[in-house]
Amino acid sequence: MRGEQTDHAIERSPVIARLACGSALLTACAAALIVTAAAVGPYAIPLSHTAAILLEQFGVRVLAADDAERAIIETIRLSRITLALIVGAALGVAGAVMQGLFRNPMADPGIIGVSTGGALGAVAAIAVGAQAASPLALPAMAFAGAGGALALVFAVASVGGRFSMAALLLAGVAVSAFIAAVIAAIVLFTEEFGAQREMIFWLAGGLDASRWTDVRLAAPFALAGMAVAVLLSRDLNLLMIGEEEARALGVRVGLIRTVLLLAASLITGTAVAFSGTIAFVGLIVPHALRLIAGADHRVLVPLSALGGAVFLLAADTVARVIIAPAEVRVGIVTAVVGAPFFLFLLVRHKARAGML
Image (cartoon, rainbow, N blue to C red):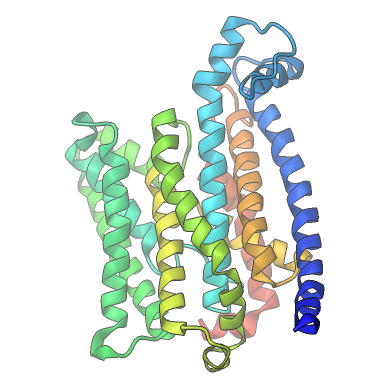
């Protein structure tokens, strides 16, 4: 018994070391980015003032800050930064889970139609003017669209009473294509130019309308889904070996797989509901971290949360300043970075890409 405990401790040691090292590095990057993102913009704030104002949020008073600078950071920039961190972390974790479940490094959070379903809900909300009734109508309809798409994909994949990941993937591709066609039709047949422009802007992904209300609504769903993914990361490792092997090791394959899919879909739907469709975060971050930290999901899933947060915050900061005082949609920035990376994956894994 003591020997088994020793073996488990030895097995955990490298995992803890890699997780601690990666977390420390990514947390330091996130802290530096938060200060930078809070300082830059149409109204530039010195880094020393920015750091002092941010420290005040934790009860540490270093120097007296200007009231105007404090108002800009606390009411405008900090909510956007926080939402970027939440959405980036959610997409990173969802990508890691999807790549693990499908055993494919080119899987991403939108592979089963959740992202396009959320986009349909948001576009429909804009088309009918639901935002006039409540500012929360758009995220609510986007979240409902994501959930509806997930339910439809699961229903199609389960026809005949036999569920498989291959059927789920094919159902996701088919449903995504159908929903994309519906979205295109809504955009084309919307006569009001302002609404049409808003749809296109939303589909490009962005965080410019972020408010603390959005943060408070998004955080519980995103954190809950990410917590489930972290807790089940060991089981995801076993699923990567193979379903039969996982069953032999005591994993309830059907239940664990469904819970992980639902958790990934929940956090993807949350991200889409509050930021629009932001591509490639869930593809790039887990794959890059896998190359550095290894394929153990006990390390990969938590680091994907931190890495996704860092990546999206960096992309959003670039989007804000690259053509200041105007700004580029963050989804465009992530696509510019992500598309070449995806082409690299296609070349590197062309055999698997051919199967998809």
